[in-house]
Image 1: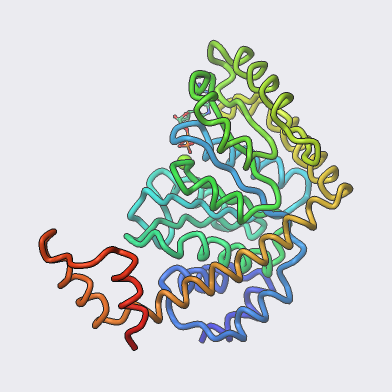
Image 2: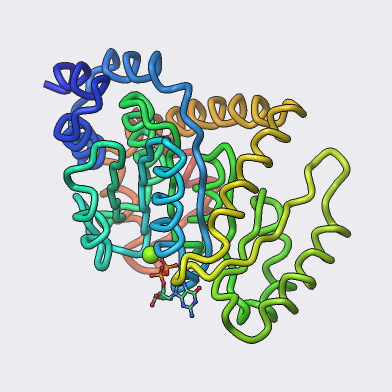
Length: 311
Ligand SMILES: Nc1nc2c(ncn2[C@@H]2O[C@H](COP(=O)(O)OP(=O)(O)O)[C@@H](O)[C@H]2O)c(=O)[nH]1
Ligand SMILES: [Mg+2]
């Protein structure tokens, strides 16, 4: 059945795209040939990651970007990933409205993915859903992810270019966050620039970026937006395109795509080895030996070795 969805996906049929993503999301059996067919058709899209703290305006900004992308005669797919949400299979809270807006417009496909109680695999599934959208011919794929813990790193791994959204109130956090975020952000957005402190935080950030960007990287530009009024979005979109061009000219886009391929392969291997390892028997053995603190008899490293030695 998954294989029969391929012609529909390739001809941008919304129902086929949607069903394929549901199969991926629910871990239903999918033959390797399905992924081979996707792979052969999914290389031309630009993948953009959008991350930032809850409430920063990621969804509002994504909606505005959709409109700008459409008015540039390009098509767009959106995968909104929320690892903190247990919901799955279509719409996260608040996302239904925007999805309905494009329900009859096959230039846009929007899908939300929640954790389904299982964080492992969510990043992989989001990337595979991205492959489906790419194979359907979408020019640009936006991955929107809440920046909490691992989320922003997963989105950066999935994307050609990562946008980190901050708000004027993020000012004090910059020092705290700079290590992690500066590593992953190709481009910063200070959203809610209608609020006090927007200019202060963008100059502070520009200063930090100027001092901390290593010579082999491109200094991330900073954009101010008011997403709720659609202000600064066209400038941002031009900035995204300029940045991609610069990355491409310097060979960095290629590097990133190669790195993505490698890390997807090694993530799949890790996932598959772990899946094969944890039999019912081994899970219950571990549970039994750790029934109470007193029942633990050996160091974790010894226990791990014993378990790996078991067939
Ligand atoms: N004042 C102001 N509010 C905004 C702006 N952009 C978004 N918002 C509001 O901020 C809230 C959170 O936005 P949302 O897009 O859901 O944030 P997300 O959690 O990052 O996806 C909503 O009530 C938006 O209307 C902005 O530029 N200025
Ligand atoms: Mg949101």
